[in-house]
Image (cartoon, rainbow, N blue to C red; front, side):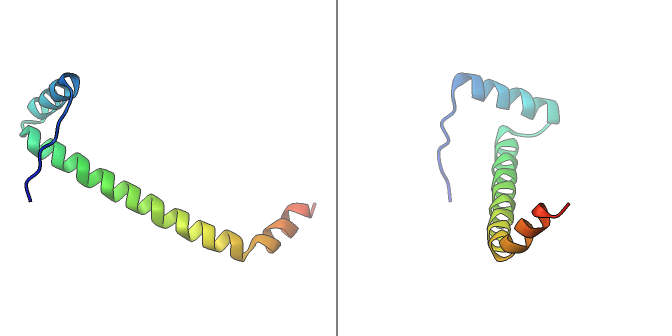
Length: 69
């Protein structure tokens, strides 16, 4: 699916420079950035969901461990 991505002049220039340094097209660099963003945020969300679930599950035990000295 095609889409239009509107960047500021500064963003466009930064993307152009990065693509030139890497010997790749601006499109390739932008698509990789989107893929990395999705991967990173997806992992972060899964970790947060697991932590929320497990912290609730073990809250009492964690509280007791914190009280012991």
